[in-house]
Length: 413
Image (cartoon, rainbow, N blue to C red):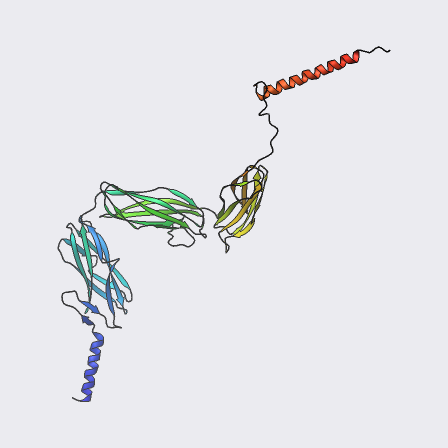
């Protein structure tokens, strides 16, 4: 063989390899195909997934097969669906799909059955020598009975920025409903726009996304609602979605959430103190901000007077790079008695206060009392009345004796 003939055979062999895909198959399973790099081709994929559970009541359920262009493939793809049992209905929406270059096409496929069981469906796409397939696994189960209802322990709530709370959401089986049930919570602003993971909006989430429902029983899930320090004040809607059963039941519950304007709070710990006369009684004054970036000033007033009070700190910036919580120590001392001490915080037009009750023990000067003096077994008041009468009689008698002595003269010798 001449060198020219060898060269021609080599060129022919390389050309053949560049145009034909390499086919790999294993015995007893559907063939898979590996595309030669750079050659136009397409792929088949199930969307959203290749497993589906449907009720055995003949209702029809849709899934999708996605045909994606690879390396600028374009052209017609013939579609064919084959079920492993005649009791499962599987029908493609298109027999031939036209795929634009570098794009994708969705072809729906419908499943239904009246017979409980597990089935498989193989979907094949063919374009010339290119062949690809995707398999679906279909589980047909007994249809659900009954229904369910959802309620919450609060229909509306108001929250400050930078706060968190929880709600109890109850799901009750009706007419023997049972089986798994799935929960979701969605947040919408006042315009009805969905707000997933917005750093300036509230956040809502369940402690579980699935409940196992028993016939005619109630299951409870916990919904957590959080507002960041940067939450925009206004009204929001929390939509709770519960779905389950075959065929699928969807039930919704809307709650109202109001995020308040930024603010702060003032609290005292403890709220009641006691001390002996002259000794100090102390309480911690706690100031916490909720989305407020400002200065808080504190002042003290006492009622009634009788104790002197001081604060370790009377003013501080809060929020916006400063702590969102700070403390000041209240120290009071004074004379025996019970006092109401009011600590008032002010930031701009915002004013809040807390009260500390203080009890100071010890002896106080008392006015002279009448207790203990009795006369002839009488009460103190009656005894003092008799004593006063005797003093008056003696006084009058003395005056009379003195007058008689003044009126009797002694003769001169």
